[in-house]
Image 1 (cartoon, rainbow, N blue to C red):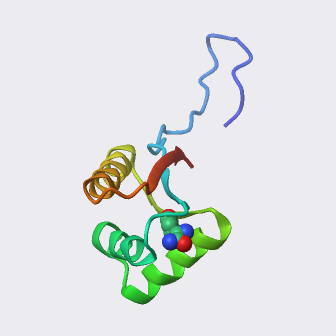
Image 2 (image 1 turned 135 degrees about the horizontal axis):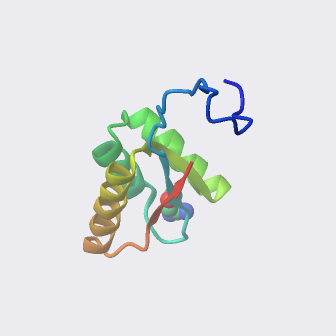
Length: 102
Ligand code: TYC
C-alpha cells in the first residue's frame, strides 16, 4: 500500500487491520531447593507434558538457569504463572515462574 501524499482526493489503499494479540512466554527459573521430581510434576500437571518431556525441560532449567515452558495469550499465561506459584507455595518450595512478552 502506497503512502498518502496529503491530497484529499487520493484514496489510499490500506492494509486491513489484523493485528494479533501479543503472546507471552512462561518461564520456569532454577533454584537450589525445589526437588527435581516436584518440577517434573508441575510441568506434567500445568503444561500437559509427558513425563519424558517434563524431565527434559526440568533438566534444561536445572542446567541453564531457566527455560520457556510454553507460549500463551496474556490471560492464559497469567493463569499458568498463578497456578504454578500457588502450587509451589502450598508445598513450601521456592520455585519461581514468570511471564514475559514474546
Ligand atoms: N536445581 C534443583 C535441584 O537441584 C532442581 C530444579 C529444576 C529446581 C528446575 C527448579 O525450575 C527448577 N533440586
